[in-house]
Length: 275
Length: 162
Image 1: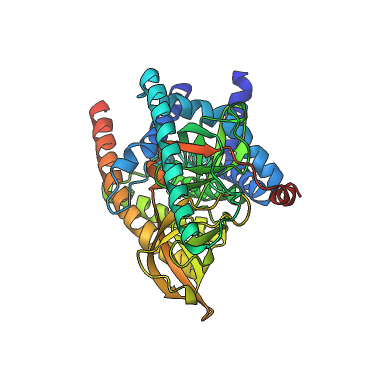
Image 2: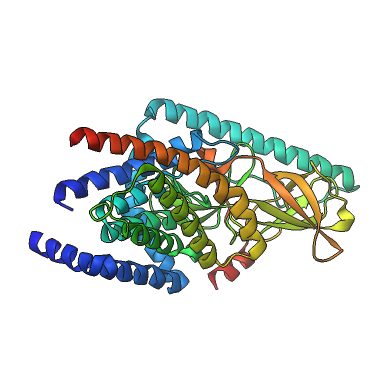
C-alpha cells in the first residue's frame, strides 16, 4: 500500500511536477466537458460522501440541539405567519383591483420544512447552499426555498439527508417577477453570479426603491414571495425595456436557516422539466 | 513530502476552508473579504513545489466547484491547478523568496487565477470588467494584506525552528 502510494507520488513529482500538472488539468477539462448528468453525479457524489458530512460536523460545533429544535419550531411558526401576511397583502391588492370575487388557486397552503444551512461555497462566488433536509423530510427537486425576508432560490438536487439549493444569484436561474405597484411582469436573472438584474417593460414606470415579488408564472414559485428592491434603473438594449439592479432582501452568505415550501411544480412544468 | 507533512497540509487545508466559510465573512469590508484558500495554495506551492501545488490547488478548486453552478464544474479546479503549478516553480528548495516577493507572487497568482476563471466561465466582457473591478481588485488587496501577515508569521516560525 505504502509502496503504491510512494510510486504514485514519485510519478507525479517527475519532471518538476509536469506529470501532476497535466493529470489534474486533464481531469479539470474532462469535468468541464462532461455532459450535464455526469457533472450532476460528480457533484452529488462528492457532496454526499465527503463534503456534506464534513460541513455537517463543522456547522454543528456551536449549535446546541435543544435550543435549535425549539428555535426551529418558533421560526416555522413565524415563517408561516409571515407567509400569511404576505398572502394577505397580496390578496388585498387583488381585491382592490377586482370587482368580483374570483377563485384563487395560488394560495400558500403548502407545508413548510425548516432547514439549517450546513454548507456553502468556500470560494468567493456564492451560488449554491447545502441544507440539512432531504427526501426523507419531504424535500424534492424544484421546491421553492425562502427565508424570513424573502425568496432564496429553489432545490436543485435532493438527496436522502440533504439538498442542494440554487440561489437567485446563480446565472442559470431565471425567474419571473412582478412589480408590486404596477403589476407588470418582467424577469430576473444574474449574469455574473453576484448581482441580480431585472428586465421590466418601460411603461411599468419602475423606479428606485420599488419592490419585486414572484409572479407565479413558470409554475415553480408561488405568486407574491418578496424578491428584492430596485436599486438602479437603466436603459436596456431595447427601448421598450428597462434593465435594473435588484438588491435581494437578504444576504445569501449570511443565511443560517431557510424554509422549503413543499410545493411541487405545476404538472405541465413538471413534464417540461422531466423532458 | 513525508507523511507528517501530508497530514500537516491536510489539516491546514481543512482549517483554511473553515476560515473561509466563517471568519472570512466576518472580516468583510464593503463586501470584500480575504481569500484564505489562495493564500494556502501559494504557501504550499512555494514550500513544497509544483506537484504539491497542483494537487492541493486541484482539491481546493474542486471543493469550490462542488458549490458552484453545475454548468461551471471544473472551472475552479483548472484555475487553482494552474495557480499551484505556476507558483510551485518558485519552490523554496531552489530559491529563497523574501516577504515582498512572496506577496507579489500572491497578488499576481490571485489575478491570474481569477482571469482563468473568467475566461473559462465564458462571461461577457463587460460583466468580467465589472467583476474584476468590484470583486477581484478589492479582494486581492485584502488577501495580499492578510497573506503578508501569514507569510511574516510563518517565516518567523521557520527562523525560530532553525
